[in-house]
Length: 65
Image 1 (tube, rainbow, N blue to C red):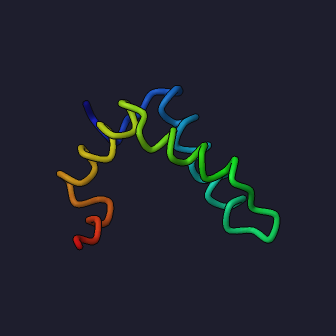
Image 2: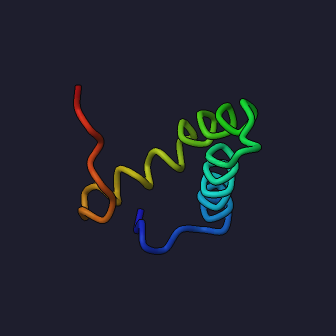
Image 3: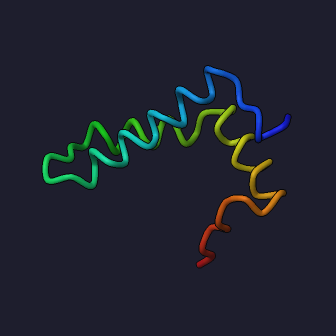
């Protein structure tokens, strides 16, 4: 997978993540947005894309406990 050339389905999921994050952080944020984010972030295509982007150091590393 080339993370720099995502297909339309993955782009739609990434766009949905951005919109739901924006909504959740707004004064009108709702639990629906949190649940949508959880579902989208566990999607296999999103997980694979994030892993490929991490390999290229193009997204931040997660904080470790």
